[in-house]
Length: 240
Image (cartoon, rainbow, N blue to C red; front, side, top):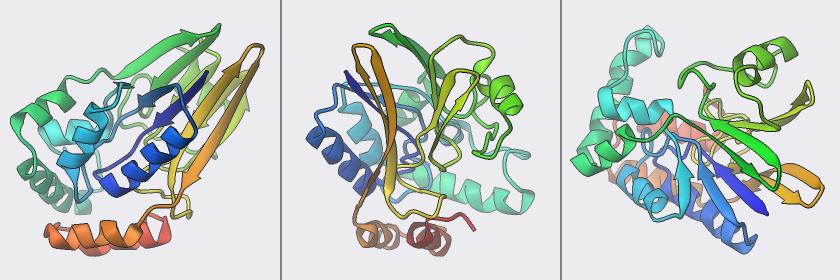
């Protein structure tokens, strides 16, 4: 049994298509999507459609919530609030009400058991779509924010766009990185796989090349309101 976990697509349909092709080539048995499907990319509607066409379990991320109700004060730096809401308004203009309702109605976390292995997935933390738990977090912070409320063998999340795998207190913690906007300096789409084979369980981070120039051109063709910043992130794999 091989499960692919993807998240933080952020409207980058070109990167998502490359990841889905890689998943197909690897003959993955199941796909799980941990949120942030459409906002901040040049193709929000196409990205939602690609996800909807999958036979996948999908949960909500903070950027999905922003599409639904806007970016609120305190959720981003004050100096970024106006621009990020301009980006949100642009994204909403590309969608119809059915797309927005789809994002609104997504659940916020998931738990399931495969071949005796319990898996808990969420976007940022089990209790928040917005809290940040970085790869450098202490074992105590990992336990307090990610694992203490729900018993599982493997915990997976997105949100920070920085992929890592770590063992804390006998639990495996996996951040998927980002399909559409990596922040860890690697300019490739990122996702995670969990493989369960009888008494063996393994986790891995997959990195996939995609056509960055095509995504940048899509920002330009679609008159995105924050092209320069998004191009810089795509070309460097870093946010700032």
